Image 1: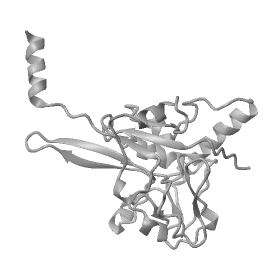
Image 2 (image 1 turned 120 degrees about the vertical axis):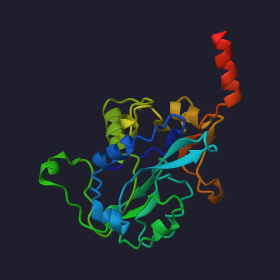
Image 3 (image 1 turned 60 degrees about the horizontal axis):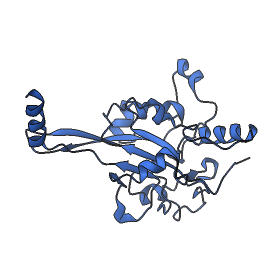
Length: 248
C-alpha cells in the first residue's frame, strides 16, 4: 500500500558554501539504492551511471581562484519536462512532491532523459553485476533494476515510506528531521537538508526562504523541489582589514 499525503511536499536544500566536494553523498546514494558499479569500460564508453553527481567549477580570477562544488540529484520538478513525454506513464509526480519512476512500466525510450535539462536520468545499458563478496550488501528495500530501463534519484523513497508507516503505526505525525536521505546522512559538513517544504516550521522550509536560496536553470520554469544556497563571498580587502584590527 502506498501512503501518500497531499499536504506534504518533500524537498531538499543544499548549501553550496558548505560542500567540500568529497563525493561522500555520491557513494552513499550508490550503496543505499543498489546503483550498479562503474568500471573503466563504462567510463570509456561514456555510460557511467550515478544518481547523484558533484560538479566542480572555479570562482574568481587567477591567482585568487577557488574551487566550488555543487551536488546535483534529480530535481523532482513540479513542472517536470520528463513526465509528459513518457509514452507509458512510467514517470509521474505524486501527491507528496516527488517525481516517481515506475521501473516495471518503463520501456526505455529515453525520451525523459532527452527532456531533462539537468541530465540526471540514466539508461541502464547492462544487467547489474556485483562481485560475489558484495552481493550480500545490497539493500533489500530497493529494487535491483534490469537492463533497458531509466532510473534516477528517488529521494530515498524507501526511507520516506518506512518513516511514514512507523508514524502511522504509532498514531502520530511525522517529526521534522525524522526522515533523512542517504546523501544527507553521509554529508560530513551537513550541507544537505531534507524535509517537508509545506511545513513552515521545518528546517528545510526555513532554509528554502533564505536570502541565498536559488534553483538551477530557472529559465526552464521546472519548479524544482531541490533548492540551493549560494556560496558566501568574502571581500579580500575587508578580510585583510579585519585581520589587521584583530592583531591591533
